Amino acid sequence: MEASTVYYTDFRCPVGTSLTDKLRRVCIAAGIKNIDMEGKFVAIKMHFGELGNLAYLRPNYAKVVADLCKEQGGMPFLTDCNTLYPGSRKNALEHLTCAQLNGFWPMTTGCQVIIADGLRGTDEVEVPVPNGEYCKTAKIGRAIMDADIFISLSHFKGHESTGFGGAIKNIGMGCGSRAGKMEQHASGHPAVQEDLCRGCHRCAKECGSDAISYNEKNKAVIDQDKCKGCGRCIGACNFDAIYSQYDSANEMLDRKMAEYAAAVCAGRPCFHISLVQDISPNCDCHGENDAPILPDIGMFASFDPVALDQACADACLNAAPLPNSQLGQNLATPGWNCHHDNFKDSNPNIEWKATLEQAEKIGMGTRAYTLKKV
Image 1 (tube, rainbow, N blue to C red):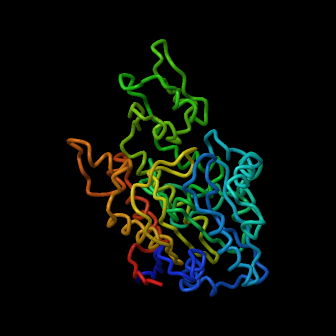
Image 2: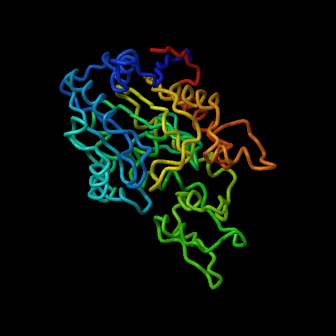
Image 3: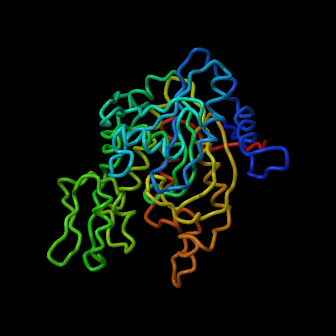
């Protein structure tokens, strides 16, 4: 497959310009205005941030994309699907409130916010997965599939299960209904190393399926019949007491996620934007954000989400780790087994390359790219 073109601009802003100006320019350079949007619904998929998290993209960026769509006659809306875990986005009412509290509403973004899988996360469409190897169909939020055009606006960051969260994760996991998210996470259920458990109960607070209780020693116990395999408890534990029982669990998650993303994008115009800034070690689904592991890098856009994620990942791999961060702390630990990979050295249990391998394998795009600076 021929290399795809990825457009890029950094965060430097001379007097007289702004970051929103630069985002607009990189989107136009990458070809967003070549999409016929006249009279069409345009889904702009993004993450509104969990309450307490401040690393998510500001609504100002969403307005740039929405305004570009409206200039082309499109009818844009911001969208996401409900979550599996407890928090502020597990049903549409709380999700909308969270979005508004974090600044996403028509006055700030220039368009409406729609939670794609409905009130309880059950309003879904079963969509064929092109060349699907692990998932033959994908359960996707109905409003996303009802749109004529799909745009992903992603905060590129680290992630405790997938290594990084970029366009493919924003699309694949983010567009899955609650049942779709369960299907992607179902490859492995975590277990507890009792001798490491401190009985802090944080994992139970993060569990979305009421699967964690405590024994007579105040040690966590996971009910495997109730567990959905979402992995939130792994990210919640500060003491490495919770782990995946299956070495391939995260790899399988990555591959299923890529197939879900392919289902969302197939058969309609799509465009993808990623902002590599506030590169926190974990997902924006957390109710907090740790210090960034890498310095801010830039804004990227492409019609090819695989090339886009590869370009963003390469930029992160080439960046210098920040000392006051999870990554910096790990690298400074005596005897640390260095992977020479900023994602894996931040979260060692991940297999991030599987996402891109699977997406390319099933024909979603190519990992080969040409980078053009705007």
